[in-house]
Image (cartoon, rainbow, N blue to C red):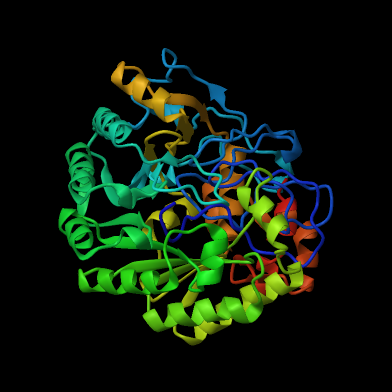
Length: 500
């Protein structure tokens, strides 16, 4: 897997016992039980996850426990209507549909809201530039904790895949404005600079890509060299996301990573020397055998390097992860939940003291260095994903491609749509998306904006249930905004239960 912002499923701890729950992660994988949920029967999409090309699952007017989950790379989607290759909905899903497809005439919101509602919703995202996500499923080796849609590098398959990926982008040619492009994986940095440049050019020929577009490439430290970095820079990459995970060799060995701590430091320096002035570093916390001091050692090393953006994700072990067996053999354990919470707080304290500002549950940045692409997911933006398993959300619709690489290539080469399923979101689903994702952000939910868009008075509808969180210091209500406090972020799942 490539780097920063987006590594395999990591979550923040809650200082409460885990509940029997359903993980509906933003990258679309079914998760095991873990420390990310509060006790109780409520089941909610987990907000403490790395983001990719998706948002929270579409919610039906039922409890989330009733939802079926698609374990597809790139995102979660609730109860999607299947669409085979001959049934791909619409001639071109990438283009903007007519008004009849974007919400006019869709069901009204639940009358419990306490205020009147509008029958059709203005499409906020339609006025904003698109984000593009390109999935590169190849890795030089498979990490022992990874549960993403990826495979070991194969040069022959790579060439076929890149041809299909370029062709899919070309079919979506509609001239829409674009201000972010994200190469995720897998390990996108296994691609040659010329291959990345070719895909960027394909995006430019199919869309109106702004000259100031943020174009991010996930990179593993072991793939960094002066020549490759200079080539990526010359080819159009403007931002690097380095998947460091730890600056301690013992932890890297336990994770099965191919780089060392020194190699990660070297890679960062090479990136700066190549002219990259926007670099994100990804760290993982709650690693096997990790202590608070171990974690802070990595944080301090990162601060000394001075990246522009940083992500902190808590490792969660999937049932089939090889790391589980290795932990059992080695006698390694993860720290208790309260220690993991201490790590989270201590890491944020150090980063804030160094001039970083938290803007999302797992992410901090220097001023004006937030991830533009990921902010699209968290602020109800629109994006189109390309490649196997990639998810898209645009104009009130959500769809995803087939997951298996060979099937994706076959469909595109055969002239049929790679879309596996598509659905139109109801007003209630879009409202819930807005609330769930808004609580990920440090600035929280703008209740006035929600009422203007959806005709819903948030406090009138849910105030009685939210008030105890305000009284407990987990949630603030100030100047028309609802925002989780630092302690509240560790209990966000309990707050989310209010909305389901």
